[in-house]
Amino acid sequence: MAPTIFKTGLVFLAQLQLTWGMVILPRSSVTCDYKTAAASGDTCSSFAAEWGLTEETFGSINPGITCPDLVSGQDYCVVGTVTSTGPTTTASSTLTTSTVITSTVTSSTSSSTSSSSAPYQPQQTGTAATCDQYHLVGQGDSCSAIESQYDISLTEFLAWNPSLNSDCTNLLVGYYYCVDIPGATKVATTTTVPATTAPADGITTPSPIQTGMTATCNKFDLVQSGDTCAVIANKYNIPLASFYDWNPAVGSSCAHLDVGDYVCVDIIGYTATTSTTSSGNGIPTPTPFEPGMVNNCTTFYFVSSGDTCASIASSKGVTVAQITQWNPKVGTGCTDLWLHEYICVGV
Image (cartoon, rainbow, N blue to C red; front, top):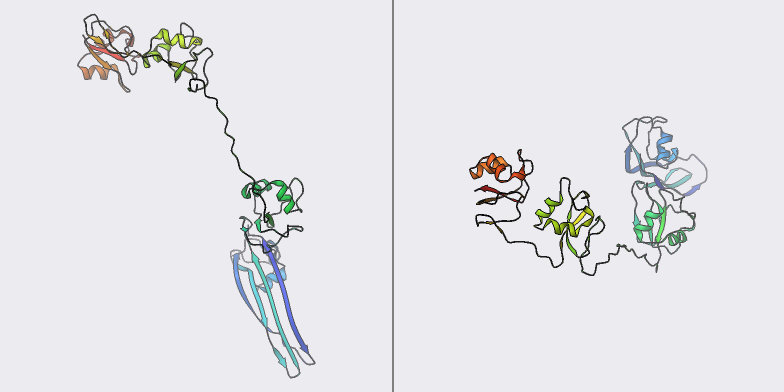
């Protein structure tokens, strides 16, 4: 789609002194400032209209053109100047003529502004006489977008451009509108941030949580698919009984542990158990460890991401059968090997 003509002017200045005899027409020259190609099916009339020109003006800046049909893909002048000069005379006549045809183009797909107080055309009637900044309306522009861009109110925009109706639905593409006058106050832009109230202990509780969580909680865990209360308690090295006390909504058997909810895994003043326990052979057992571990273990292994019973057995020089014997909770298929827990790998 070709840009839209915003100004086409024709100025004819002539000084004519004629007594009698034959007048010889002046010579003409064309200076083209902008050319563009015609599309298939374009005619002189349609192409000229698309650029806001009369067919006569279009023909003047394209001398020798054959109308009505244009050649698809061929460039034609749409912004130019035609100058005819004299004098040419006979023995008893004098003719001096200067004709200038001009057109200027501005793309309708973009908008432009100016801080000058000079008039920008075209404008609708009534534009504020003291306007010192203008906006050229492009495709897709709206009053609200313009107001936001220049930090002005709808009241100001309508006052400076009285041709607009109250709901600003008659904004015209290709016209200049006033967006500032001397002394106008810009609209302050503010961003509202939802206020949060910090609890008395200064710790913000995430959401969602289940009802009844202890009010002194200072550490939280988001329940994932596959989690159990025992898994979470072991993960944070807290007694399962404490986990139930801090999260009573999960129930005494963990039947109501809901995926996607946050649960409490620490409270203010609580000290997690960091010491090891003594097994039956007097060797301290590190924590956390999977329940059911034999009490005569002498060698332990901390389960990391990617570990399997087979890989652990191979690295420690034992068999998978021995690992499942010493750590019955992992199951015969080693399907319950808990991440970040210690297991027994030697007795």
